[in-house]
Length: 202
Image (cartoon, rainbow, N blue to C red):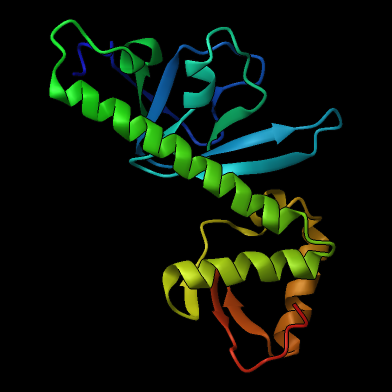
């Protein structure tokens, strides 16, 4: 399958660009190790983290499958990373041998695209909240529900969380401090504990 997909592996240092906005890509990326962020920078340099990609997840598949489409986002290594690239056109076209593995690959790619669409809808629900507090409550509530516990860790540091929620870092940190003082939550770096008995007004 790797030969059929013209697969190749590359390594990236932290903060190195894997893809840049404006690139035309024909290969989708599979994270083998490390993490990367899908980021969008505006004209003035403000950055929004669109998504995080962890080992075993793919990225740039939508642009790679849309022939000629230019990336509207950049892909940045959040830490030292290893990436496998696979030719999207070959991935989406069944080879002459019509092997069951290729059919399985196509089915899996469609499932990934559907899951990412749901993730984008979830993020939209977070960032469209009217205040920094409500953005935080929406995000942390979702994270707690996914973990199945009121104590959990998030994958972002403060700047990354602010970028993900389209919020100012100082305002976000101040709001977290107020929420802690009000007894809504406790936190230590990226570890959070939500207090179920507290009134959130959310």
